[in-house]
Amino acid sequence: MKQCSKCNETKSLSEFYRDKGRKDGHEYQCKSCKSAYERQYAKTDKYKQKIRRARWREQNIDITYDKYKEMLALQDNKCAICHTEVNQFNKGMCVDHNHDTGKIRGLLCTDCNMGIGNLKDSIELIENALEYLRKYN
Image (cartoon, rainbow, N blue to C red; front, side, top):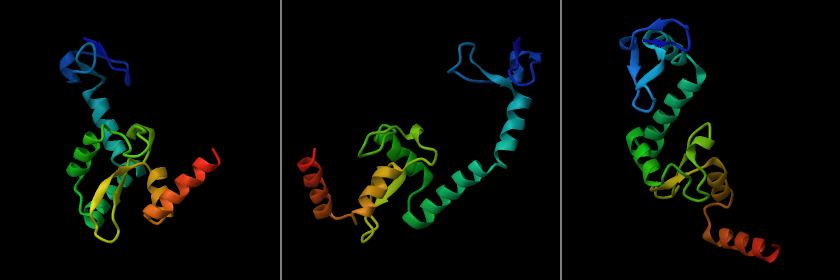
């Protein structure tokens, strides 16, 4: 028997989904509360944005959600430049790509992606910025 953290009813363990990450091996919410939450979440803007972003990536950058997750795992769930973990960002990582060739380079946080973009993907400008920072450090 276990008490649901949402409805506070005590139910048998068969009324809870399994979760290997928890001490007792089951979710903290019962199946009916969890299902109600999932139905409600699917209606939220956050869920819709997540789906919209995944579709946009597939259509515009030619990367599937599975490939995105694979790249993220290869980068240890961190930005390729600043190494900040992906869970620090609400939007997830940006797919950095060469705008001329369309070739994907890696996954970056918004700040690093915008930094490269604002420097026009120019190695010369990035080196100039690096020299500038070293000069005034």
